Image 1: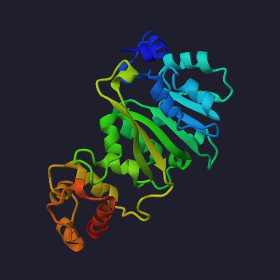
Image 2 (image 1 turned 90 degrees about the vertical axis):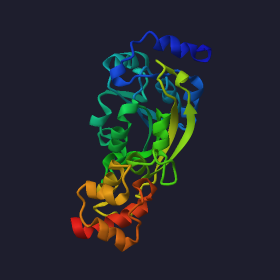
Image 3 (image 1 turned 180 degrees about the horizontal axis):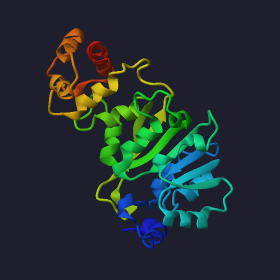
Length: 284
């Protein structure tokens, strides 16, 4: 089964993967090559979760520089031993949520982020890198050219979804990911491409920074409106907003001509902003 990954597999199986850190090491060379195809020699790469360095060792050969953040002390010892002698490589032992790109790159410097992250922490990491929709001056986002992200396949579909997608896919994560960026699935990745093998398939996602928001002057009520709409998916937009304690819902819906039975997952970002603007009169 693992013939085409045997070298990486033999190394990975000797390491005691930590379930609490969501460690699943990419051992499929064809997928690693796919990641590398998105990197060139002029790129400064910021890698999140290098693990045992299977992708990292190839990035060092392909990119101008590689800065990697790894939280696992056992993994950092291996990385330092095997890759520490490379002049274009630096390793930070820390939690990515406690790391800011400003600490390592000068103002205006753009980097390419490569990340194989635990599925359970995808949303917090993307929020940290891209900023929330009301965080127009997020310092991390100002450094990012694009993110090549390995994530659970179902989460990948949510990242790339819009109001035309299946209802369960479109939500807060979709809007967070696409408010400043363009997102696309590059490749679906089998669970057999990892060791230990997770229970679900994954996908490589490209998140390209547009350097500007989808809406230039969003309503200060926008984030609250969106959170309320997706907080109770089974309810229509009127009842979702009322359940969240938002005032003037009926009046705002009438003002913009929106059907009260519409569900949040059917609203585009511009629909949400129009509704949020109408709600300002009653809530700010």
